[in-house]
Image (tube, rainbow, N blue to C red; front, side):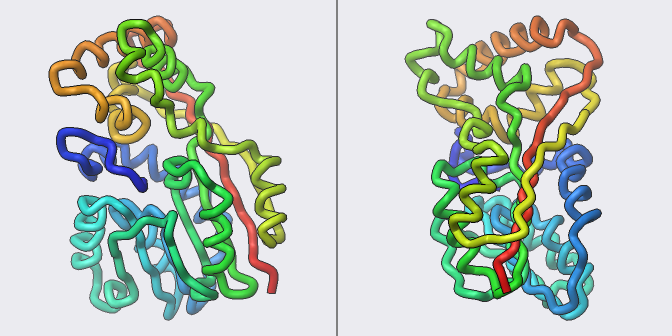
Length: 274
């Protein structure tokens, strides 16, 4: 999920808000499931596991496997552990969720699958995290992750535009959308090969999410890309900022009614050589 506390006044992620659009957030994971062959006895770590649904599904598919979910958000880990407790004991006993920062993730040849869903965009130094992933994998182990790479979309452009507007520049001018930390596919291919990975595959996929209006895009964004902006503003400033953003979105999308949010994500697959 993330590795920074960026949401005042709670200073933590909101699992309820994040899962408001659970169906849309589930789509990239389902694409991964369609390609990722389950292996009996898989040992899995989920970096940025959020509320835990993805890891539970991954572990459920592997006979005799085990999964560890890591997230820096106490609220997300609390929610994940509640979900774990609701599972059949035979499955729950093969799961563990714990608070931790994947930037300092430290494991040596422990996992046959390192997985991450929409988390790496929250850190700047991707190379060091991917090197940690390589070290954590057993020989022949797999790396699979996806990240939003949507900085070209109207809402993302509008957030940046508004943050650099004279009205908000002094408060928000140094904040950017998380997709700007994401490299291009060819850069990941080169980076992963230099680290030692093989069988590298990097590609974009654009999802289409129907929204009732541009205001709903703001609700979608409040759980993720808007968090750093809103965290910097005080409670009295946020309504004006969001009103300005809505005005930009209505102009950018050319509607105040139903619309399609196009969302580009980058998928990465690689393997530690046997």
